[in-house]
Every structure is written in C-alpha cells, then in structure tokens.
Length: 277
Image 1 (cartoon, one colour):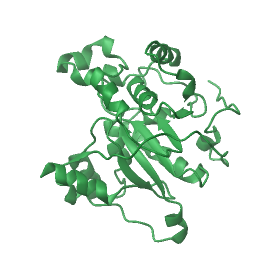
Image 2 (cartoon, rainbow, N blue to C red):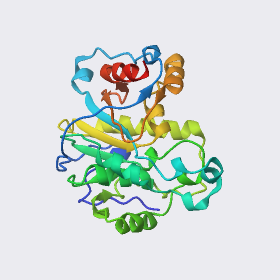
Image 3 (cartoon, rainbow, N blue to C red):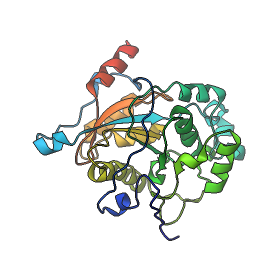
Image 4 (cartoon, rainbow, N blue to C red):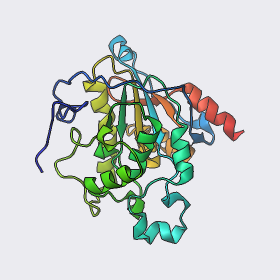
C-alpha cells in the first residue's frame, strides 16, 4: 500500500522517513498527574546512564508510558484468552473504562497510541478534550499472538469505537501507517518488533519540535517493558523484565533523551518500591 500523508495530520509521515518535522499544535489535556507501575525489588533495577552532553540534556522531554485499561481478555479464563476468537482485538471492560477516565494528566502536547482497540479506547476516554491522537502501529503488543493481540482492519476498529460513542475523527490513522496495514497473521521475529518499538522513541526524540515537551504514549504491558529495557545492558534488561509490571491505566513518568533513550524517573522507582513494602 502506498504511504499516505495529508496536510491535516498532526504528525507527518516525515517522522518515519526521518525528514524535517512539521510543528504540531494539538490542544492541551486536563487535570493533574498520577504515577504507576508495580516493581518488585525496584532498587535492583539499574538505571540507564545519563549522557552528560549539554545539548542532549537540554533536549530531554517527559514521556508518560501508559498501559491501556483492563481489557475483556484480561478477565477471560486462560483457555478463552488463548482460543476465543470473539476476543480478537477486544475492547475494555467497565472497570477498564473507569480506569481510563481516571488517568489524570495535564498539559499533554502529543498523544501517541497503539492501533489495538483497547489502547485507542483508553486514549479517547482519557483525553476527551485533546484534538488529536496519533496511531503508531509499531506500538502494538509484542506478547503472544493470542486473539486480543491480533490487529483488525481500520474500518472495523473505527466502527466499534463509534458504536461506543467515541470520536473516531480525533485519531490520525494515516501519518504513521506502515506500507501495509497489519494483518492478523503477521508474526515478525520478536527482536524485529522490539527494535521497532525503540525506534518509535528515537523518531520522537529526533523529529518533534522543541515545544513538544510532554508526550503520552498509550500502549501495552510488554511494549512498556521493552521500551525501558536497554539492549546494550543485559543486567538492566533482565532487571526490567523481572521486576517491572505496569498496571492498567497508571502512567509511568520517564525522561526521553535526545538519542531516543527512555529513563524511568527516580520517583517512579521509589513510589513503586514503597507499594511493595
């Protein structure tokens, strides 16, 4: 499929193509900040080393990694979750909708979201006053290919969101769309999918204008763990995979460095460590 770019989209196709970016000016969101992730033995997680370059430090942005609200797949039996086709790309439970409505973040400059229904539904509920949500396919879940992780065609997702009374027109499906929209049988190697996740943040760091300082990324359990794992630090990656357990609809505040590295903020580690004691 040919790549499509329209002047109206908030994030241009040039982010993917690594050409100069266009200024993005979505409306601001609402209310206050919250934190969240479950980390056992949080002190064991080795933080990534900060670059000491003045230029890099000056380019740091705040990124909130947010796992979607509770999905219907999460409350299904183990067998149903693995085999029930009715759970394909399923949406949120009533509790999941309530969790999404309680995501309290203010002054968000950009919202980037997975194309899976439960993430898009979370984003639309959590940020009703925001003018646009950018859908990025590379943020879809990297776990097992159970029904809830299988993507659907765009028009099917749009139809469900509209039926639930959500404003689908806010979602930019086009500017970050891949050459071919995913089909349910696409199973690239995990290492490829993990590299794609990390590259999302490299592109954001390199191509967004300087005034885009606060970014909300609505995605998934394994996407968050992958994004925060350092591929060049085996111990840090093991600690993240062992100890970081993102909760539904609880933002994790991170710093995005100029080279695309994400670093969890220290108060997140301390806060999560306290919840385990």
